[in-house]
Image (cartoon, rainbow over the protein chains, first blue to last red):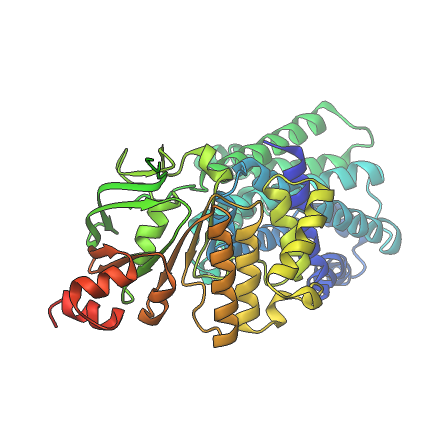
Amino acid sequence: MSLTKTFATASRVLSQLRHDPRTIVLLFVLPPVLLALFKYVFNGQDRLFDNIAPLLLGIFPMIMMFLITSIATLRERRSGTLERLMTMPVSKLDYVFGYALAFSIVALLQAIITSLVLLYLLQVSIAGGAFATIVGAVAAALLGTSLGLFASAFARTEFQAIQFMPAFIFPQLLICGLFVARDKMADVLQWLANIMPLTYSVDLMKQTTTSINWTTTHTNDLLVVIGFTIAALILGSITIRRQERP
Amino acid sequence: MIMLMETAVEINDLSVVLDGRVQALKHVKLSLPAGKITGLIGPSGAGKTTLIRSIVGLLKTKDGAVKIFNQPAGSASLRRMVAYMAQDLSVYTDLTVKENLIYFARMKGQNRHQAAASVKELLSTIDMANKAGAVVSELSGGQQQRVSLAVALINQPKLLVLDEPTVELDPVLRSNLWKLFHKLADGGTTLIISSHSMDEASRCDDLVLIRDGKIIAHSAPNELLRKTKTASVEEAFLKLVGA
């Protein structure tokens, strides 16, 4: 692995985004707008919205990052640029971590903007404060990036890649404790929830809504999310084949 | 005096079955000299791209079947010596020409200064210095192809493998590119260039005719015409396949 090649890849991915202003607007404007929309869905029920908004903050950016990463990396697999890189003295990890780094920067900006809008414009009071909120949102967005990178390996077309979003994310959304508390679900679903990454990123946001201080539960949730992120990145790099096996 | 001719590509009984059913290559035996331009000529579907992908190591082949500069195809050390230009564009169409060249130069191990210098040189080689800031998707097909060629030229590879590099180019550009290929060969680069166009064959030092996954002839262009008693490569091809 080479740090300069990782940085070169990250800066190339960011340049591609720079040439695409519409995507930039979608990335940074859509999540806060969706949250604002939700605030008015819960019109007058501010307490309820205060509890739900942070959870959504862990979900919207994650879904967006999942989609753009899986499409971006699928495009590389299909256009031949990834294959070309694989004929060069380039490690697969240079490529994968380059993507992760570029989208981490995007995720960080997105999380900061969305959190600030939530806290100060929409006047949501989150017990854990701005820092814990942003940490949770960034971790969730990074998880989305790494899962998207991994999922793109199984898609042959953009058409399929888009449909992986409901396939990978929706089951996790349903059982992560967002709709029904996990201990109220059937046993099998509880076991499944325990091994799904989204459970931990949603739990991290939940802790932040209820606890003023950063607790060991916060730390444990965060570590699990980071662990899943790194594992998905490494698995993603394994799915890249230097040689086609006929 | 004995001239020692280095062998660039040595293929020994290579058969490839794609997707478990298509027999793309059948018992190919081939030895290509270094420092020459070898034309890989045959109709579309003959197995040219499969042969090329085996040579650059993108297709896994039987151990020892394909050797490049005496090392198994696909070896890590070959990645610094072999460059490949695929039929697919394989550049970032949403980036500018310069951004593409700088990125690939960096990925081939050049530092910032080296990359800046080689981009300048490459742009003049492909005659596109005035298009450095243009986004690739806005260029013409021929210009896009030259950007892809420039990427392959980074770091002056010892073996340059080009899959249909001159298809769809206008005659002036094509002729300029062939001048460039000969200049590279004179400088010691080995080139393998595939084409389905028989009239490009006469520009090569060495010809490999391929059809249905089999090599049907391998010799210098004039020797091929002499042996088959024909006046053009196209006629020679027809005679060899017995049409």
